[in-house]
Length: 336
Image 1 (cartoon, rainbow, N blue to C red):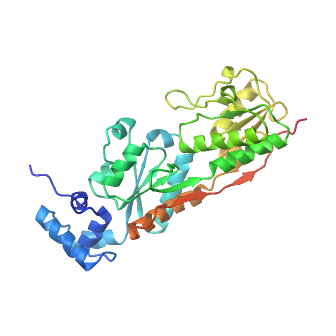
Image 2 (image 1 turned 120 degrees about the vertical axis):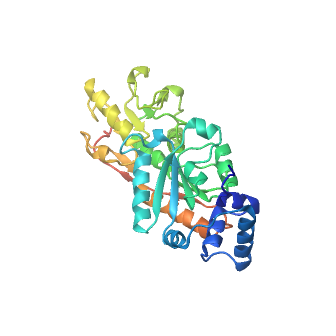
Image 3 (image 1 turned 90 degrees about the vertical axis):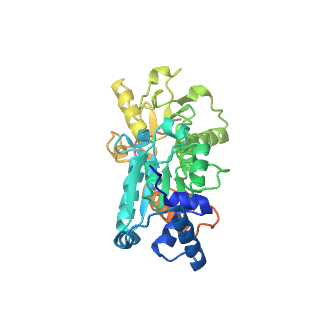
């Protein structure tokens, strides 16, 4: 059976984006008449089957945005990535567009498999949510479908990115602990698991180093097991510190529960700061000091960046850093 010709095949043949091919074949604005005629000529020569007019008119009213991520990033409700996904859906729906979520396995990424919604040509553009290898991102670039990296940054990647200011945020909350007299501080998080966690760890290190304190391996406690499931083993600590700087509120919440179950008083015995300002941070006793990431602004910025890329394929790559703000509550005690 002869293989059906897709828009991505035409785009690859011509060295243009699938969005350009889509606009040319559907009669939309945004491409020159010369390009439109050339796309149609190549499509006809390759045997491309045009969609009927009613489908084209319907599709022109809204765009379909693919959202690609790993299952582990949003398998738990109220996670950082789940909240980002919810905000993206809200903004897409409000503007008359559609968001389509797809998970990809580590094996599929290693084998450089195209996402299913790219294979079937049902998306106009793509948002990569979370950490993906450079090789996989390069493969997506070659597929000519415009995309934006959300919560992932590689200075050498040459791709549109939207990230939170996790570095400064963790630097700020760690400085708060230092200003409250704490020197024996442990960072809670699995460094390297995501861009956000690693960025926050470096912010922690900077604050500690500025205070004349060297960060050693004993000052870092992972909050994940080998399968990337939440697991906090305080028994691994050489000694109990006076404070914890946690990479997220979820981990801080479970840490607080563990410590309180062992008889520790928060903050009288141990101080804790979280990160993200999830609803959990206000459900703890005491309420948790944290740093709020503006997830809504991150979600909206990623959509707007992708729309700009679709409208201007040749525009320079852009990196957006979305700032948050410090929220002081009751989980930190001043010590001598």
